[in-house]
Length: 291
Image 1 (cartoon, rainbow, N blue to C red):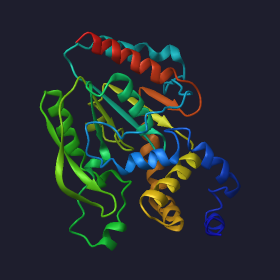
Image 2 (tube, one colour):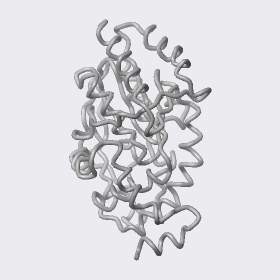
Image 3 (cartoon, rainbow, N blue to C red):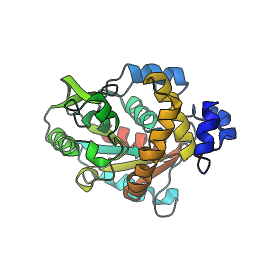
């Protein structure tokens, strides 16, 4: 009943009849919802490795470029990796909308190349601390706007990692919308992989990435995944999730995330082929073998 009421309110966007099939389709990236939920619960967004249990990737990743969608456009990207000195750190950015499958793709790259070779950082760890506000005030904040994140600190950390320095990533609690005591040490490794919805919307940040990958997933699939995640893991009501999606998540996606796709080297549409993942992993392994 709640689903029907919300659908009537937002009839221009939500097709209720599609919810059942989309719920099943939303499991494409990252295995079952239970596996993803368990992984997220054990993952505090302050890490040099990705969540465990989300390493399964869709066998149907595709490789496209913003220009022509042709695999033949891979040359410049391959050259970027091949020309790197074996001692140089390669920085990879993986972006896409909320629920697009960024974590699954990032984890597939991480696990394929070996955790000893990759430093993994989530932009979510850099949400600004809101502990000075009341819980009600925190809940009213727009967490999908670039200003909600301390991107300048992330830029500092990436530059430090490229210099060979260890950085200390903040810890963030989604339930209280505030940072928690303590940090996680992230040591420099041959590859630094950064994941987040807004990492290609800030030039000072995306200029640091040697490889920029955008995971492009249909809005309805992403919404279903968000509903699954937030109801199970964050105890939110369906009404609250839909209202937040329509009030901030969707508008910010259209304003910031979707336009940032043009900054990507690779666009990975869900449900096509595995060429993108295989290409990136094979070139990274080749680079790592030279060290």
